Image (tube, rainbow, N blue to C red; front, side, top):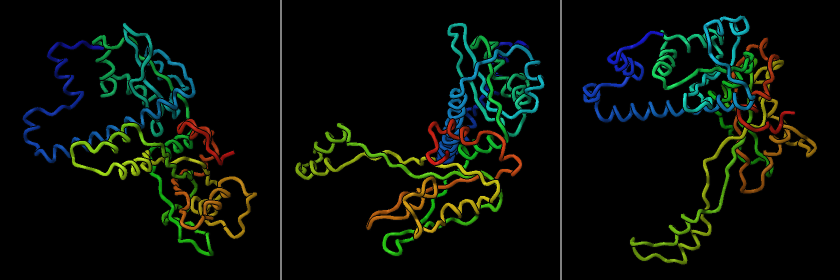
Length: 329
C-alpha cells in the first residue's frame, strides 16, 4: 500500500466522505437542504437496518473469521463463482475482538470479485480499509462468508426489500363470514411468496403516563375523577408489526394460482380439523358481530422455476427473521 503525505491525507479524507464545502452549503436553499438531509438520513437508516439484519444472519450460523493475507485468498476456485452473504471485520492493537465493518448479500456479483473490490485500494470500498490500516486505526482485517443459492438470495430479497401488501376483505355475508379480496397484479409466473398477519402488542400504561394523566399541573383546574378514569383505560399501543407465518414456493403452480388457492377456499366447507395455513386463513374469515378479522398481508418475488428446488428456503427465512414459521412443517 502506498504512503500518503499529510496534505494527501486531508484531501483523501474529503474525497472519501464527499462532504460539501461551506460555500456549497450556502448556495443550497434551507428548505431543500433540510429535505435532502431528511432523505439521506432515511436512506442511511434503511441501509443500516438491512446491514444489521445481514450481520444477525451471519452470527446465527456461527461462521469463523478468516484473516485477510493476500490476493490469492480471493482467486481460489471455491470463491470465484459463488453467491454468498459476507462480512468484513477488523480488530485493533488495543482490542483483539473482531468487529464488523460491513456486511452484504452478494447476489448479483460472484463473491470472489466482490471481496477483491473491498481489498483493492483503487476502489472506494478498498480505499477506506487501506486508509484505516495505514493510519493504525485497525490492526488486521478479516472476512467471513456463507454460500447461498440463487433461490436463497431471492428469499432474502423478499424479506428485506419487498413491501407487504395488505389483503382487503368484504363485509360479513351469510351472518358472520367475510371473504378475502386479493389485489390485482399478482404474477402468473413461478416464485416465492410469504403470508403474514398484523400483531398489535398492548401493555399497561407506564408510571410516567399515569403521573402525567393525573397531574393537572399549571394548565388549569381539571376534574381529577375524569382524569383517573381516563388513565385507567389508557393503554400504550406499540407500533404494529407483521409476523411471518408461512413461506410458499410457487414451483408447479404460478404465484397467482397458489395465492388464489390459499385465500379463496370455500369457508362454507370449513372444518375445525383443517390445519396449516389454509385452516388459519379460513378460520380468520369467521368473525363475531362487531369484530374485524385479523389483518393479513402477502409479499412475493418472481424466481425462475429451475432455481426454486435449490437451497433450504424455509430455514433461510427463519434465520433472517429470527423465529420459526408457524405453518411451515
